[in-house]
Image (cartoon, rainbow over the protein chains, first blue to last red):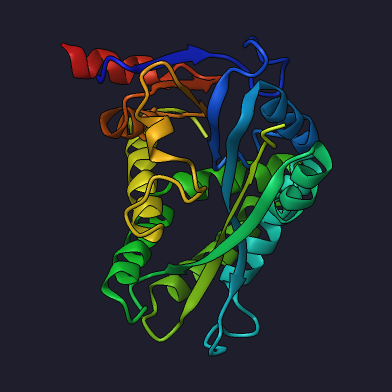
Length: 198
Length: 83
């Protein structure tokens, strides 16, 4: 453990227990489903940043794209993604929230606000070696069972669906994401902004 | 999702994936590197999870890095690393 690193247990949705004008950089990654009130979080970041300090938020938005239309129209993967959106929406933490961050940062007073959107491929189909590795990691993570268990809980408890119906959708989805002729990606959405110097 | 060992691995893989996607950068905001290398300065990592981003930042820069999370998953990680 590096000596300049510390951890604290706190809910970032509560009032932050720090002094105002305290941080030089506030970073948050993959807080989806953990944060319901983004304007409040962005406002707290502003208050606790020093003038001139930066905030950066980043999250994957799991709506599935295919530029070469290799995803079948009746895709199980796309349906699973749609269900994930529906679950999150019902839980009060919509998955497309990152698309509002830039506007919310400007409203809070941040300047030099930028959105940068990356394509995050599923599986090793991309041309670049780097993106093939990214795709391989993405595939490994979604295949390890954790996501399936999470979806099953949401599908039955939040959406009131039957487990056997979801199993069919997920079986299709798994086949598609492992199929090398299917080329899909999701967006990794990064937004940053600066508290003005004065 | 439950924070078991599998989830910890997931977090670290996830971190590796995002760092690769950002061309080996830990962030893309144009934060002054001199600011990050000043020991009295501070960085806050929200929802730090296993703390892997915060630890990488602390390895790379001299500023104080504070990771916060609602779950105490970094603690198990720290004890693993320090024993």
